[in-house]
Length: 304
Image (cartoon, rainbow, N blue to C red; front, top):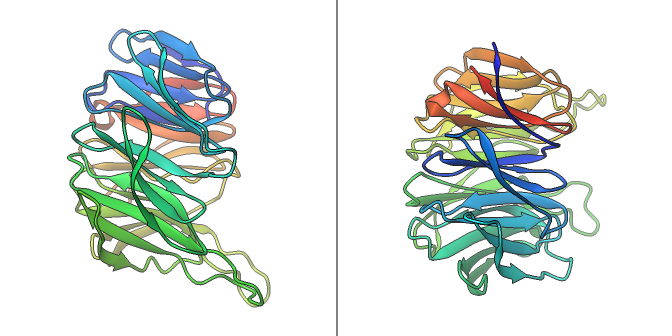
């Protein structure tokens, strides 16, 4: 299929705005482009090593978090920094997302904290701490009513393996989990709740066999109670774990050694492979008829 004209430099992670007006590509720079005009709006180097980004519901702000846990919010009209947080280099963690009201930001930490922040100042207003764990994944439904967090316990002193990972499902506003979900994996690379909240897409790994044989990674679709419905094997690419939903919840995308893989969510039937070296991310637009494809060297819009 042909590629549209909009292209980006190196890309490690992508973010699409809720109304699909903008896309952010995170590499050495934060590059924001208009999807309607297929042209760049601005590039920013205001934060070194950007790792995660989220647009607010009103599509006026972009929050960016880096590999050390530092954060900024950018004005989408001109790319100027509105707020900045210095985490002092000790707070790596999972993605950030705006609440539906745009007043708060939620993120996860590899120090085991789930934090709710004021969106205007980035100050913490609520924190839930899980000792000796990492929060490795944060996702929410389209309306922000349900939030999913992936928990990865750390190996304790004297133990050879950590406790199994698990996921927690929360109502908004965050007060306490309404459900604990066992994904039945040795480690969870990423977990993402579907836009409507009905399904959970999980990308995980199993423990090696007794003879040392490594099992393939698995992409799995479960219902909101954690019951597995469909699964398929995928090959870890060495770049990233992804489980991305299309806006209508019909498609799921991931990356493996061959490139970007697109499946129907129901049945995990293969729909398309976009061959790409060092694929890093996929973000659906136009209800899955197109997608932004990210790789370590560049990113572009692909007609699916």
